[in-house]
Length: 315
Image 1 (cartoon, rainbow, N blue to C red):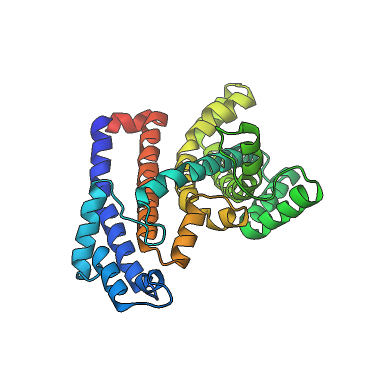
Image 2 (image 1 turned 90 degrees about the vertical axis):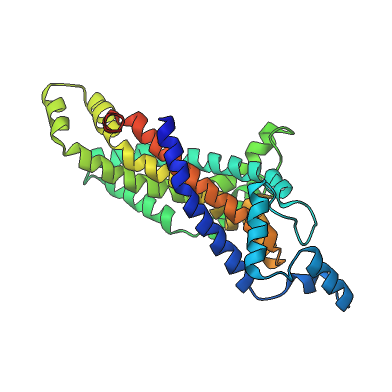
């Protein structure tokens, strides 16, 4: 298993290099000059030249990239052009917030999507099946920002059960932390639960038609044991793949939700960085999200081998 993990990590290096090249090149194509924004309204040529030299923006683009990558390999993602704080410090301060929100949203999606998908597959063609598909399609189709505003109006403005925005760290007030994350997690989890439900249903329908499931039923096993022990276990492969990819997507895709609920996570930070032309922050955040996707893919491969003994035997 350790050899397999090392091979997967080595194979991910070219992907991360390509992502870093893409991010670095793309930010150079963005309109505007961050140095002009930093220089203020007077835009003194001496100040502009000083800033360009300070941040080494006068160097050729390939030299800038090599310098940046050399620092990244040392754990230094550069310095924010707006706040002059290390990007690593900003990432470390914002990452736990997005991680907590992503885990909470994913738990909601798993608790809703997987049981609903199993029930829908077992009762194919029934009213329950059609209702579950309609709800799942609605969850996938409804825009997150619209659902977030609607939930704020109902639960924060009308009922006053939950706060409309903001974030309280868990270590300061666990209960208030839960209240501030519940609405955004529901917004994100509703869409993910619809996707999980559809994939779980498809995987279960395919497995339920297999010969070994019919054999298990013919032996007189309890329906619950047939569904959970034999069918669902063998349908886990695509569900594991989807779950890990969805979690990686949550790390960088909760932009609108964090903006609507004013949550100081990765999404809000990258939006503010783009508007402020803070290229160092954009590069650092996108690269961290790419690393997160690679780690999620690695986790999926490891889980495959834990779930399916045949893969371990083949390896």
